Image 1 (cartoon, rainbow, N blue to C red):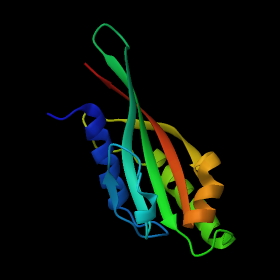
Image 2 (tube, one colour; image 1 turned 60 degrees about the vertical axis):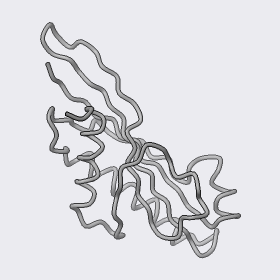
Image 3 (cartoon, helix red, strand yellow; image 1 turned 90 degrees about the vertical axis):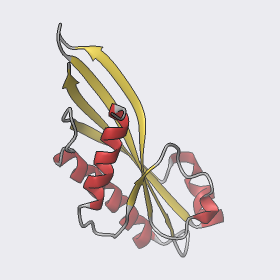
Length: 148
């Protein structure tokens, strides 16, 4: 039996790969974000289990609060290509909305409570765009599930 965080991350990968998004990609599960950013040449999507918090919900039930990050990376031709950058942010929102509305099939069943979007990967964005022509975004999903 694999860990609950791995089961959830694998289920999110299966959901992503089983749906047609506005841009085609194959999602993969990973344990850390991409560190060799120069190797990114095409659209890449990585699913990372990032946090698991467990609490006693009742005498017989436990509640898991899990976070999953979906890292989205894509090389762009020009760092000021607004249509390409806008399309990446739109894809990130599309992924977040899809995962929020479609619970993964795992035991125990987990429901997405919502997501946070970090477009452009924060303060690194200008440097990544200027030097590597790389746009990155992270969709952080919060899931809740119960088990005994």
